[in-house]
Image 1 (spheres, rainbow, N blue to C red):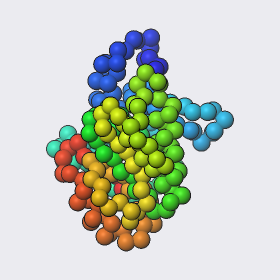
Image 2 (tube, rainbow, N blue to C red; image 1 turned 90 degrees about the horizontal axis):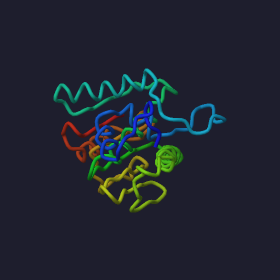
Image 3 (tube, rainbow, N blue to C red; image 1 turned 180 degrees about the vertical axis):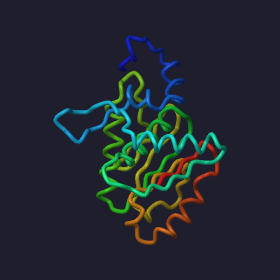
Image 4 (spheres, rainbow, N blue to C red; image 1 turned 45 degrees about the vertical axis):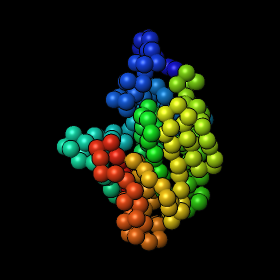
Length: 196
């Protein structure tokens, strides 16, 4: 695990800090593929638009409101990346979490899940959670019984999630009924999260 400015971090300190310091966690744990693929995988350092999204989530919680964020999306800002890495962070450092990412097409779910799996595989081995169960759409962590799953819209029955990311909602046929059904599975708590 990379250490900030020569600082040695125990595993207990790592997990404690990772629960409260998202930017530190991203920089020290998550690696993503940048647009310039020749750079290889790079630490996730949030861009201004991504910081604003995370600030909106934190702001809702500080006001005592469960975070429910609707993104009127501009392309290529990295909202899906940072949202999915936030879901991965929560599943990694908190117990019994269930996160669901929903996309409009099978191809999109595969791309989103590959980004999540790549970030998990690139984690420093000292902190990488062991995978209890994995398939082409889910990671289930053994130590804390948390899981993150990606699904095509309309194939999400029987899943309760504390965190939900609906990608490309405008392209989902029957989006209104889908959101009505799926929002019933997300608890109305401060720890929950919905980004669409």
